[in-house]
Image 1: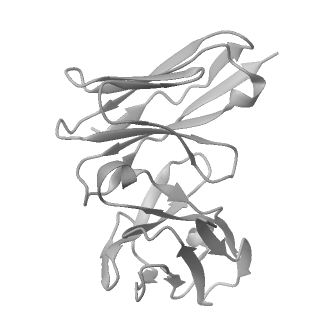
Image 2: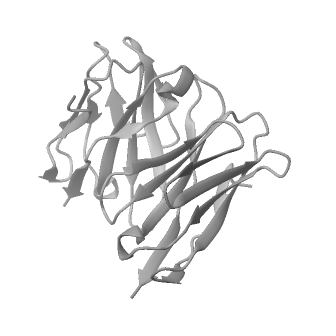
Length: 114
Length: 110
C-alpha cells in the first residue's frame, strides 16, 4: 500500500494562475479531505468528501474547488491563486466504520504564491 | 469556545523524564479520540487511537475522562526523538468531520 500520495511536493505560482493539487489513496477509504496549515496555526479543513460524487465545504473553502469522480482520487483546484493561499496543503483519508476512523495524511504540498 | 482545546506549550522535558498534557473537548457526543504527532513541516502521523477509557502503547499512555470531557497523553522515559507537536483529534460521529486541536509542543532536552 502506498497510502495517501500527493503531487506535486512543491509548487510556486504567480498571482492569478490556477492549478490542481493531486491526491490519491489506495486504502479504499470512503472519506477524503483537504486541509491547509499555516505557520503557527492548526489544520484547517478546506473541503471533504464522504464518497464518490459527494463533496462538501469545510471551514475555509473560498478559492478552492474539489470533485470526487472515483473512490481513489480527490483533486483540489485553486481557481485564481492569491498570496493568501501560500500554505502547506495536506490531503487525508479514512474509513467511516469501526476502527477505520483513523485518518491518514499525505506528505503535503508546499505552495508559494508570489 | 473551541471544540478541541490544547495547551500550546512548549513543554520542556529533560531526557528520561515523564511528561503529560491534556486536551479538552466540548461535544459530549464525541465517540472516538486520537493522538497524532507532527514533526516540523511534515504530515501528522497517527500515534494512538482511543475508543474506550484509554490505551497504552509502549511509553505512551492515553486516558479518556468522559465525565470531565478531556483526554490526556503521558509520555514516559522521554527520548530526544519525542520532540514534536502532539495533536488531539476528536470524532463526533462516523460521518462527521474530525475536530483538530491546535497542538501541544513538546521539546525533550539532553
